[in-house]
Image 1: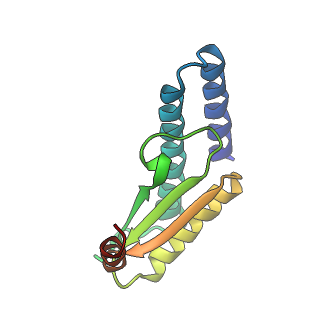
Image 2: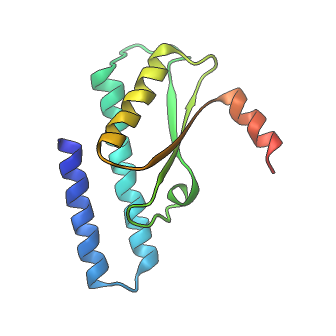
Length: 132
């Protein structure tokens, strides 16, 4: 409920700004990406610290979250998809899987469209080498 209220408030503020200055598209796209960053960060932090607390994570129990595509460039249209990559150690642990899943469910419960990938560092390096 807290995330939903935050998202609704942020969207209302963005709508107000767009209506006031409709010709400032890049500014609004940046603001939309920033708002999305905050929602994703809060969802991830909640999953990692409240739902699945792990006060002493091992080296294989660490996760990085990266924004991809237009969102990753800070150029996000209102209501566009959120493209995320969760980067984990290899091999992937159960704790990492739980945190990723909980984060995604929190975002989906907000009715956000999320495209996601979960990769280990070796998987990411292999894909980067294979894709110019």
